[in-house]
Amino acid sequence: MSFSADWLALREPVDHRSIAADVRDRAVAALAGRESVEIVDLGCGSGSNLRALADHIAAPVQRWTLVDWDEALLAHARARLAAWGERARDEGDALVIHRGARRIEVRVLQADLARHVEHALERPADLVTAAAFFDLVSEDWMGGFCAALAARRAPLYTTLTYNGHERWSPPHAADGDMLAAFHAHQHSDKGFGPAAGPLAAAALERALRAVGYGVASAASPWSMDASDRVLMSELARGAASAVRETGRVPGAAIDDWLDARLAASACEIGHEDIFAAPA
Ligand SMILES: C[S@@+](CC[C@H](N)C(=O)[O-])C[C@H]1O[C@@H](n2cnc3c(N)ncnc32)[C@H](O)[C@@H]1O
Image (cartoon, rainbow, N blue to C red):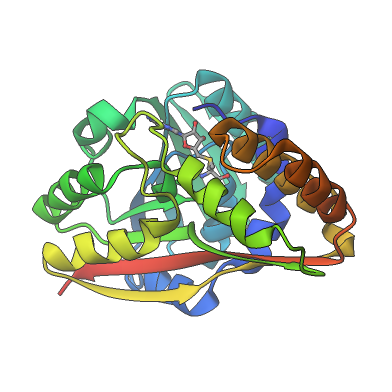
């Protein structure tokens, strides 16, 4: 499944303001007192997760490995991060960014995480992280991933895993049918086996507990109003086209729902953030 840089840029400000601060603080606390930290970001897209987290980490040196299978997004991530730094220098295998007193070394790794997650975890990591990624994977894949994580005793911090809750305002008669059909579509295989979709956050917590990790989680919903009209409209169009593919809702009902949603005044989309570490 591919994601456009434009879509990731559109959601980034809403993602960042939605992140659960208390869960993030636990991840940051796990890295406290170190001179340098190694972080692996799975399914990094254009680097949003690094931009959300790096300024909260006290270590003066951060070494990030950004993993994705999409070469274009990895190139885009490097370009965006170079612009985000106060100074940036290309040192061949690493992009070195300076922000305040922090030196952030960024390496990119192109890998298909469905098949080569061990490769992505080869480098010792003080923290493995991912944003908006785990709803794409299957529960089976989560089990294997958590076993690999536990073998390294690496903590995990994930943000913005979709949890299936949605509330649009004003309500529409087709909301229930549309959401049920959208969820059915969310379970389609994105390369990792049947995707956990709306069940991902709960499934990930279970898989982490099964390998002996302590888990802290909190809701991180997107709360949007008319000032987020562009993102709300894109979400509505995306949901309508996914539902159309399922054939579960009559076309006329989808059209009517979409018309109403393009004029919606507010919308909340549920997500969950998780920090987990060996108990
Ligand atoms: C919803 S995007 C999230 C991107 C980024 N973490 C963010 O928060 O903006 C999911 C990301 O997972 C990546 N992805 C999907 N399947 C993958 C796979 N099999 N191997 C590696 N990356 C994958 C996509 O290319 C995309 O960048």
